[in-house]
Length: 288
Image (tube, rainbow, N blue to C red):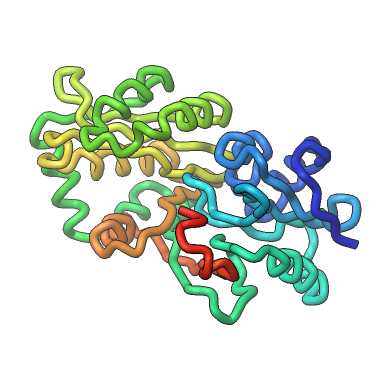
């Protein structure tokens, strides 16, 4: 039996324990993360938390709909065992009950879903072996940053947040500042900054689970972009975590230049699927 429960009715201890013990312990599915990015979230629960899936529920007037929240790349069915085809179909049917859907899933549950790609790097090899997988362009950019006198160091989260918003010269993240600050402080996280005479020119904040680093919040100043500072930052993170059980999750991008940046470090693409459904197209401007 599968139940759809509002987050207020979910046993959060069982929910988070299942997410963290499943093969993909995604930070996106943890209750503390969902509370920030989608306060009205619900969850599909099979049996006594044998398998679960987050539902990013939003409400507008009389309508309840599903929209992928910001900072959340994809969702999946979380379980410690193999989920049967029949059980997967139960999850699929629950999603189809919504009249408006725009979500990203790890499984291709729907024929009309659009394939996208996530990029990640297994850090279990030694640094020397990982560095051999760098592209020549990536190596040149790392050396460019080093020759300019830039150096990378780990920084405290409070300091990193201030650096991040200062480096966000286009003010892209200003509308989400409160959410970002809560996420970074509520979730386990680490931050690195590239500096010149202690002036930061690039910063990245990584959310962290027991085996995964999420490259969620990067920002560079104009100087940082000019001297390829983010290449040096990522190289430092790889160097620090080489030979561990961690995976560096760059998240996905369909932008060619961004994809080349990820692939330049040896990151490998894996597919996920964007599914949309709209039975409200006749109501112009209802959803934005």
